[in-house]
Image 1 (tube, one colour):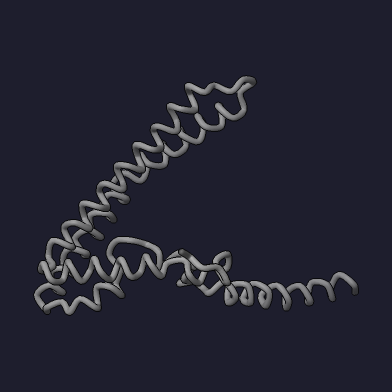
Image 2 (cartoon, helix red, strand yellow):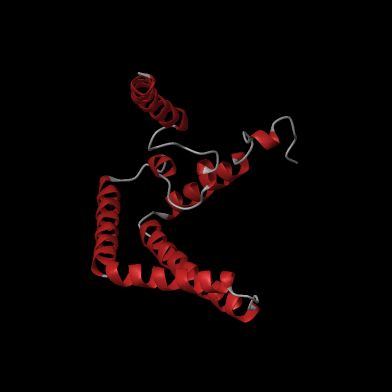
Length: 167
């Protein structure tokens, strides 16, 4: 009888605990404290730029094109990326499990990761440039000003900064 009670109790408590923790986290679209600190294209800022209907359509088309390219890229070489990830994992694991640490190999692995990150960041900045090139000079100036305001306000509400003057 004890086991049956435990199973019933577990079947009632477990879903309750999981749903409560998901609710406390904020669900799928939880905004973290650093979300306001991101640079780049932001819907909130873009809405304040008074875009023309033509600009909105161009942004939508460009965004959709970029999304389709990304989906195709992920779909086309998913197996290659998986193999590369596993090879990288094996290299890192071999480095960490070796009897002696090899700084040259560690530097090489770190450089490879850094190169990939630089490539991704460059592609992202290129796409952002394409989108921002659709703005008029006045909209670009307003965009820059709104970003500066956001950066000035960034982190003021962070717990570690409460009660401190950010001068």
